[in-house]
Image (cartoon, rainbow, N blue to C red; front, side):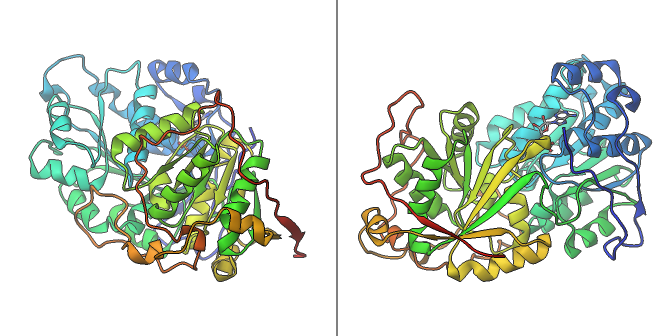
Length: 486
Ligand code: AMP
């Protein structure tokens, strides 16, 4: 597997309190001093060698160091903290049924429910031969269903901050035995306004503990957070800060906003990718695109904050199993999705925050696989594209897509109210009731295709099953592509 191996190389980004680590990935799992129970689970998962972040992080965590790890999604960062965590908690493993023998010893805080579920699934996989219990708690589901499980006692608790605070208020969880704290995707937690929640939670933990922080990007806020919560952290990094995965081919289509849906449909038809994740700026656009693509015979579904947790899990499962081939989501909803070998990501709208571009395209090209990231950029969005290129320090290949007028018109809906003006954007994480709300997205450019009243789709909306015959789009349309010299 080709990994984007790297260590923080000089530059002005390293605050004084970091001790820089320079170690390359030359070791195997057997040399990492992990217990046979853990090695057995790894072998059963088919892991043969540690990824660079694992090779660097595991020895340091076992030594008891605090860690600031710069790792993009798909680098194997979850195992990088879960494996040494299991190793350190193994002496406390117990088959006793008594809750008193299973206090929370490790707390993993993550920004989204989907990530919470995935991280806890990984914990269960790696801990399957250890007598250690784990549980995941997140909002959007009845809190009463989680409380009894918490009360039976768990050593490893994975949680989103808002729901954890609810449990704290209900006194269903105690933290006096917590010896390890992980802040996963810390940059995203800050973006989502979780800082006040984090401060409240961290104030309740024992002072004497090990802290591990993982972040894909190193903003000034992240450096401030690490200075506040970490003690003499070791810094490790497996990809250049703010760099995009090198095994992802990036491409931009310059296209009028009004023509994007036609181009997207064409790109999907022309692609041999088995799974495509499409990013939109709003929940509304995600829902509408999914419905439109379904009408055109594409097995599409949307994942966003207006869907219930069950609907989101169902959509994600269907996507993982291949019954849904195109999943459309907003940044928050799609954050943390770990879909093996996701071949393609399409940005229907590019993000305003350039860091989000890195997160988005990090969904593809995971664990060394290659991937494709396509962005549809309207003239109004070109200024955001410039910001992205500045951040990733490279110019993305561009083509201008010209969609013939008749083709675009044939797929447009009648005029009406602009959805993004008529529906105020709401928080993508309904479980979070505290802390500042994320900044409302700026108004997007006009897209007449969406000028019709919004009909919520719900998970009951049928999507095309792979064995159903593909209903042909009403009219075959073609965009004309003109390569832009860079
Ligand atoms: P993560 O970055 O933690 O989301 O992991 C990305 C993907 O890499 C997941 O599907 C993991 O199962 C997989 N993975 C993690 N560590 C290894 C490893 N050492 N060898 C092979 N695959 C791995």
